Image: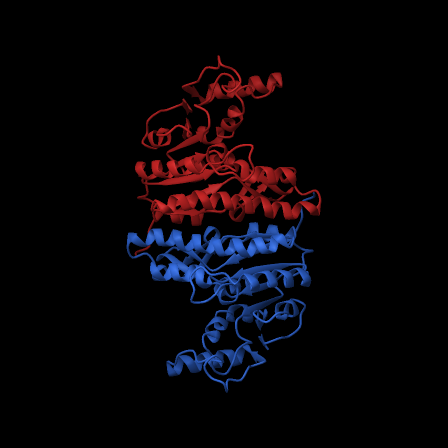
Length: 271
Length: 271
């Protein structure tokens, strides 16, 4: 094969699969096997030309990270083994997702965030994306995840899948982001707690920033049930004119439709 | 924790664990569990202050890589899924080794070569070692392996654990390399085929180059049964004044002794 340049490669799509979609929340190390297998089928069927997958930690990474307070950084040496265990838990979850894709002949390749990223006070500071880019050029589907990563000021940190999505979107100049979550989109209130919550079908970056301001001003908790916090992480990507679609990945067909370009759930754009 | 510099960190040791030590040769996907558990114990007992482990592919990576001709580079699209499968096979082997170390409270962290390296015609060309270095500073034990990696001219390539060891030794300025293999060291002939083969206890870089020249001149096969080929890969590290010890890691106690600085097997130095 001749040396290839990146120029002819189509803009990739980033698909985020939430931890609460691929694992059973509140039950340690419990896979949602049925959802994983269905999603692999939808990804195969959609057959997009360039795709990156990022998944969350769900009931694999989170309980171990919490036990050892990995998100608080290095405070004493007893946490060291906890970092190893947190990363190891994430590789188990990743293995299941990757295997499901490979079984459908989707050429997924794990890219391990803790091998390529150093954060500084929890924010991505150094990131080596060239091997990932090269694999993408060749037709592979890189698959990354929220991970315990080395941190230049705090020793180590927890890198969320959402922060990773936002950074990848900018660095790889992606076409769009699809956030596969366990609710139908961004609501005016927590849809799990409040029946009158209304789904926002379309919002702009400016409206999103307004929502953030209101929360900061009133020092209120995230009334949307955590979804707003996830989306605020995507502001840098939105600023970069990358559109975001939030879809319920627990409902069959939604991820397929979003990959095909249909608007389901909440659509967010710079505007 | 304050921001740390690398200056006070002791020089690391690289321990290579051959694929034929940690897996059963000629039997696909067969672990040598007993050896892995014993080696974890020896590493725990030796308690060296800075250590990097690199392991081979053995009966995990090699059969899959061979089936899809990954070492020949990208020739047709049917190999793509083979690359994914080869890497996935290596992560299974790595998981077993890493778990055995973590079970003994050794803070091992997998560093995935295919995430941090791009080769050019099979030789390491780009390598991001900063996250690895940061983890080493914090007291972790990075664990790497021979892997299928992206290649800038051939699409992809097989990176041997031996080439990786040599590059890491130079880039991280290591103290010494311990090659844990399934024979007692470098012999004058293949010890498995020739009973009169004599173990070389000490050789210099110059003598090693002479052996290489003889092979090149006569176009002979590697009479040492493949061991010389492995060691020739380490010439750049030897040039860099990193000493190499070859020990039989299938014999209990040898890796422990080598980690403690004892000379067992073959000792190679620049001289």
